[in-house]
Each structure stands twice: as structure tokens, then as C-alpha cells.
Length: 123
Image 1: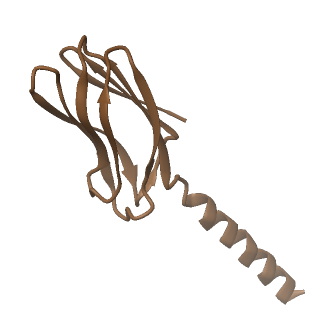
Image 2 (image 1 turned 180 degrees about the vertical axis):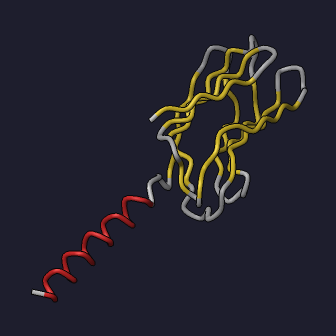
């Protein structure tokens, strides 16, 4: 009886530890260009810079969806996007957060506006 109780307690502990390690090793990334012009050399990455998405160019009013891998990320960090506007100006912005190398959300939507960059996250 003592061993049965110990075994059940051990299984409960294992399951609770596993449920504490929430998060995904990938995040769906949507980049939408609402800037009024073409953008190019688009790079979406993590602050650890271990995985990234490269997009050659995106026309105005176009949208692209890709997966960003966090499989090699181990620490806490944020996401960033860097790109070149049609006028040659390079923009970079950080946003969001991941913990222990795992995404806290399922989808990251980035909207590139004429004068701003907006990050939105959803489950």
C-alpha cells in the first residue's frame, strides 16, 4: 500500500512538472505590409538570433505567413523585425517575449505601417 501511494504521488508530480513547462518551440508569424510601398530584406528573429525568417520582399497590402523556430533557443528573450523601406531607410523593432526558449503565444502578427510597426500576439 505504501509503494502504491508513493507511485501515484510520483506520477502526479511528473505530470505537474510537465504542465509547468508550457510553451511552443515554434511560433506562426504573419507579416503584413500596410506601409504604402514595397519593403524588402525582411528578417524576423529572436533576440538570441538562433532562428530567423527571411523574406526577400513584400508588396504593399501583401501578407505572408511563416513559422519561426525556437528549437535552439534556451533563454528568455524577445522577437525582432528588420527591413528596408522603399525609400532605402532601414527599420528595426523589437516586440513580444518568449520564456526559457519557448513561445508563450501561438501567433505573432506584425503590421508594418507608414510610420510604425505593430506587434500583436494571440493563442
